[in-house]
Image (tube, rainbow, N blue to C red; front, top):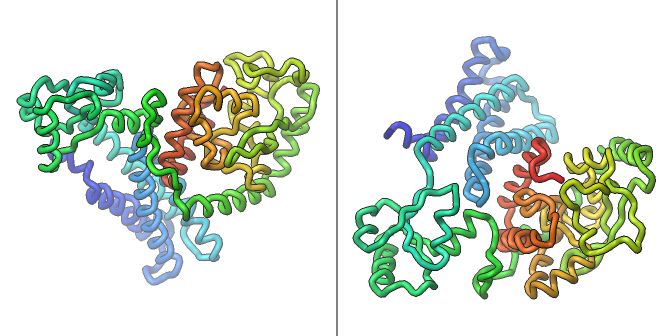
Length: 420
């Protein structure tokens, strides 16, 4: 058991990654399996440095994204190292640096295999467990399947299970004994969680029923990342549009041949800071007469008969969203953010939920936290849950949260889960 617990320590994970992901490919290369080069060869040195940097970068991405809600380390291993190796190779390619493709490939495979093994070992011994002081929102914890909960009926129970973090609803009217005990435990270094914050983190959404002045924290978003993201988004979108233009043209032709109507669908939606703009998508549904448009029709239903034959494929693979890269280039949208809603839906939401406009603090996105967690909204009853995810994204706006959403989006595209 002690050996198994070592896998959870950062230094052992990095040492294993260094051994299997960097040193082993070098040894194989020196044995002639990946091509032999002298240690002072530039190609050799670049490959050694590149794989080491990819290890560190991939490990940082893995740690940062796994710490976010709705994420598991096992799910993030492959995307994390695809991103890290992709960045290193792009840098090498941009600066025309020589490197061994075989050594990089071997390093990638060994590194991913090592971290998958580590995460499997950790999963066998580590499952989050909490001691729960019953009352208020704490009573929701037993219904969360990703954790184990032990109810603490008395301070004596809490002392007996001193190794467990404690969760309590600080606003549920705790007794004086519990308040003094929790304060003392916090001073001694024991983890003491507010139930509302823990549930929010585990489920990845802000609870609307209990929204208070502290629910969203300080709504002054990262003043470095937000403007930088806008320009990186636009540059990346412009490159993708240029490279993928023949493919996009072919999709447009296929849509025209599949059903009557234009290839592109245009609709006015509400975007950044509540400003309306025209969104572009590949048309995946039959054309509806203006008089047939309504609030419910703005939402795609499960098994919606308006979706065309080709539209089912486009929506499942999220290809229908690609023309929105035009909106990204124009600064109206981002790659990642809350999905922009129609004028009708936005007006309805604002009437029902006064703080709905908070979601407009960031640019709407082609993909977002609500999309990868919930999928498309299919009924009015889903609206409030979607907003919970959107507000959680606004509250936790960061580069690492965006990386996590990219990982989830790739999973959705490959599996179809969440796509409708």
